[in-house]
Length: 323
Image (tube, rainbow, N blue to C red; front, side):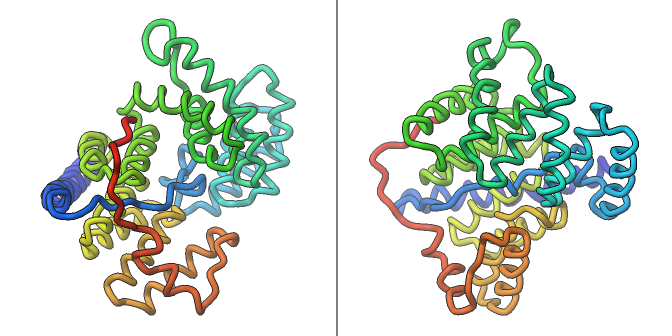
């Protein structure tokens, strides 16, 4: 049953990729390239390995984990799973208690440090997050990234690199350059990792390289057809080529998989607005603001925020940035 469902999803996405390639070829021959002026955020990525699977019964799952954690807070797996779920649910103050203890209880393990850093970043403590993540990522570069000397890539390694990418624009310029060098070298060496593929595609869209974005998505979605962040990025590419109906279908699909991806909800609201569905677009934007209270768009500024020119611009590029 799951195999058939995945086949349908692959076919469904392939149709959009073919359409996107066709549109890209035409648009680049006739117009200036378009640039996505925004970027992915920390809230777009779920950390708990079970989060999407338990979405329909997340309250019960959380209660069970909370009970187990209360009974055995010093068991590594219990602390990690509970702490990750709390971050995914946005219960950051509760998560802080769990991760502060985990860092102390498991001093010799990098995993608590990596995810306490994710929590720090969510709370706006970007320097603390960078100070924890950078040594983890830099060590992988020093070890050769891939090959015999690089060792096994664990989940916290990948998420440390991803986290660095997502916060780099909040760092001082010299640190941003330092982080970018490390992140670029890693994601370029392991483009088959869906998290790293999302970084590549994000950069391609931000620099107007929609064809490269489409090529990367075509490759990575074959093996990861249910990845909601990648599907969201494909939807953004469709928006950038004025295919609003197709974009909305992709945003709908990503929302079905995980309704708590902030960028997807924002871009879905914009697709609805582009289709002249103003009431629905305002309602969707309200839902996005519930996910992130810092996104505070007043009623009289919603139209301006949702308008295409607020997030997509035409720009003549001097030279493609090579990732």
